[in-house]
Length: 128
Image (cartoon, rainbow, N blue to C red; front, side, top):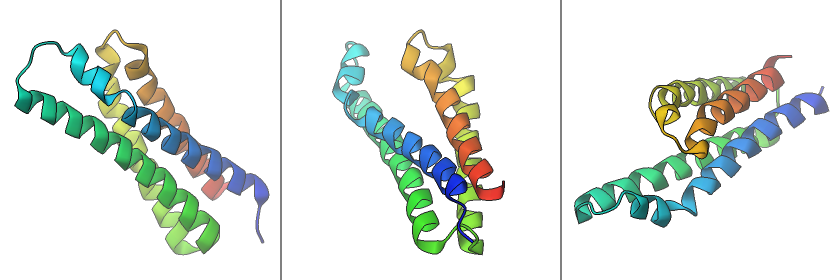
């Protein structure tokens, strides 16, 4: 039996994750510029890491969304993918809390909140 409320919760968590990933891609050039005068290697590293985080978040959200919609909510593979994706989001939340949260830039302070909320929504949607 398909529970629409579960799919909605999982979808909100997945979409929130994807949107936050997309939001990492657009300001990359400005983020690098805000570091001031740094070497080209450091600029390339920051650019790469910023884009990797965005792409990874998009991938996690898209994976959760597709596996849930295509595989079904009660499918064992769906359940494991959703658990593992939530654990990854929680790990990113902890990392962000210990690092980016200390930066005086509001979007960095939002990362742990968004990662945690997304992970919780996906878990709740998977099990309630």
